[in-house]
Length: 155
Image 1 (cartoon, one colour):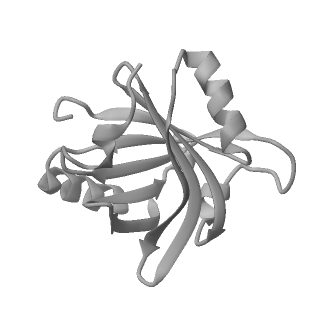
Image 2 (cartoon, one colour):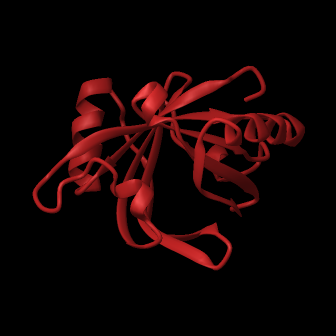
């Protein structure tokens, strides 16, 4: 992953199975790594639960998130209170080095609010609310090569 920078398109949805089907057809994705009912830290003494699905199309990773409960407000942004929706949510940027991640997080915090950030699954991540500048959130993350990302299917 060292050569990759922005490489994740992430969607939030009210029905992750339907969103997986739609994105599979739209982008010729043959399957997903599913993480149902995943509970994870979103900050100090805060957690959220969401369904997640991940898949690569070539070197572009797609992520689908269905918020379920807890500190999941950042994932509910743009979703209706009822009915089906799938909305583009964020660009994800992976860093292969923690020092580069930390530098970019410091720079981003000077520009944008950071609604959630935490260590999880052997790595760390942070979301920035860049909607006023870009129309979407930006996620920075760093995970070791042998993390859960190594098991994401590629098509």
